[in-house]
Image 1: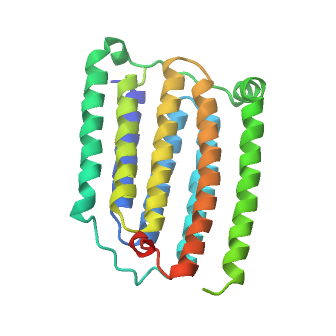
Image 2: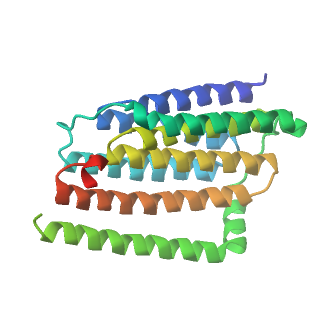
Length: 168
Length: 97
């Protein structure tokens, strides 16, 4: 039990508890704020697993941009009066079925492979090496992703203009 | 020495299940989108653990693409939710069938 593993388990408990609180809140703003805490924990986990650049991106994009976008939409729509039927029993059946499948597959995976029990060595991928690797090996994928983001911008502009012009 | 790879996979799997639970059982379009975000994030956790396990940067490269695709997906999804809200005046998915 080294210091790194203690930090890992603390972060895992933080992430799981805050995510569990987030998915069970009735109030949407509370759910988003708990999820921000969960994403901060995930960013620290990325740092622990040797990805400092991705930890920074997680804070900037997930906790910063995406969650603030959710908050804006929640503030725009009037959803305070929306009474939600909480976890109806009919929708539990597919979720519980998937949970059982996952538990079976996870137990088989952990029991079946003895190599998987070896603790990982700590290592850090420097952002400079990571950037060089990314732009040497994956330049086409980066271009495709940038095109995808451009298409998303165009789609959002079109949908927003469409929603504002017509009065339904 | 951090932890065995199976513990990271277990954490990512539990996170994925939580996201799936949120997406399947909540009757609220915004919470369904939040569940999708949690699922994508758990995928990124698993990929970064794999990058450390095999000492290869490929996993981190995939994780950065997951981040970009999550950003694109959530922006389009929220725009569609605003459109649907203008049309029906509700974000209950039961109101759309």
